[in-house]
Image (cartoon, rainbow, N blue to C red; front, side, top):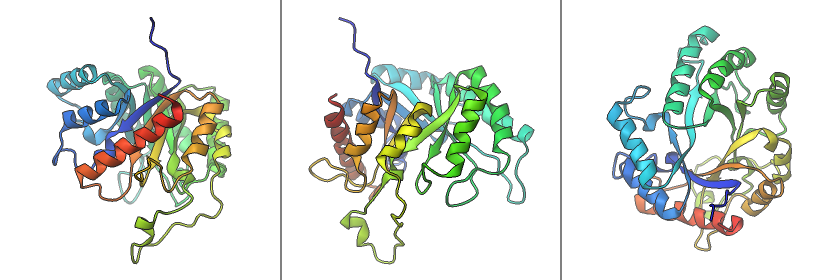
Length: 293
């Protein structure tokens, strides 16, 4: 019997392990953890690659060995389309493109078809740096060459209805590109703080005015190739306490969205491997319950 292709694939990013990887866990330990959760795809960041952006052949061979051993596929490669390497000026287009090409070449070599390409932003609302269209127009040449989709991340506190999101959509439709789109981070739907966070003294809390609504997803999903299933705190009943997960997931399912849904832990105690283990596993149970697989 042929294996059924599932439209939404469950994954986890190694960012969830950012405080413990190479401290008390190595790369294979992370792969084992993902295998135990039954996920099918993995996200790594550029910083997870040995001698980035030119890993030794032995590291690359081990990467593919781990993928095969733990039955995982490359889901998304996390990197930056960075135009601000110097404090006093932006890189011009021709200066920045070699960095982008090196990243896309590496992503392709490691088997990734999607990249979380963080564009340089200029304010709290995550508006892109001036002239972003010129950078993307030339950057798409490399994206097409290596067949890697560039996904700009819509991340809290950016709003789905902000002008730059529509500008990106207009750019996609104008160029008719299939190599640029969005990664929607679920943190942008956060509507409350759990008690564990609210009790932190002296911590400035985010305002939940003008919240993104799960329904706002519908307008951007046709251009969305990946989602960061952000979570901050999972309780003992396998529910996320800060984000309306069931409502967000219902929109993905109802719209027939296809892509990799990558769990990303950004809550407390990230230096405690046992706590991270418990939180990431609880989160995957929540996603499995909603998806049914």
